[in-house]
Image (tube, rainbow, N blue to C red; front, side, top):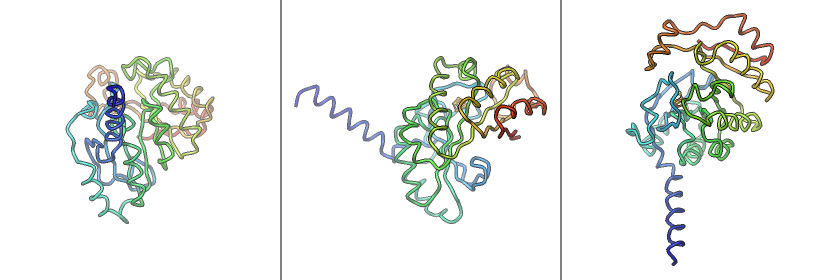
Length: 252
Ligand code: SF4
């Protein structure tokens, strides 16, 4: 075999290994949740790794791709076997779950065991999202800001393009979904929320959940100082947003 052939074979072997569901890196587990997929009783698997650096992140320990593994996937599947009939669903969350090549095969393993499959994503990897989207029964998609304000939230240039591509994929997929936005007055002020409403409306988004910023668990002192008691979203602003996207809810 030529050196180039050997390199291609090695690369394929590495890719195959990465897609092995047992390679999934799980940084934390919530055994029972009624809030991560509204209307479902779900276990939540928090996957390790996220390329973005949002100041309000409540899971900064999940940002490094190679953080400590809380639970290996084999033992997680065995644990899920014992939850059949007690849980409706498993939600893959993060971190950014689409950062991991093993996500799709892990989602299918869970579906094969009879659980509905939910996915939380910020859309940082639209190509991976495209690969796995048909394996999801529901998607909670974080849309952080209008396109012009994206990098101010994520800290990463180019994040708006990835998030926009993911949003268009989700809307076109036919998979049940909700769009969610964390509202902090410095990051997404009222005029930015109205611009975002216009962007979502132009794509046909009909369900949009606003999550007021909460200082608990936030490590960014400037964000806390700007909203020390948490964000209150005014009723008249919600009414203006509903004129654009009918299904706006505030989730406290
Ligand atoms: S995208 Fe989510 S996990 Fe990643 S830094 Fe932002 S809030 Fe944290």
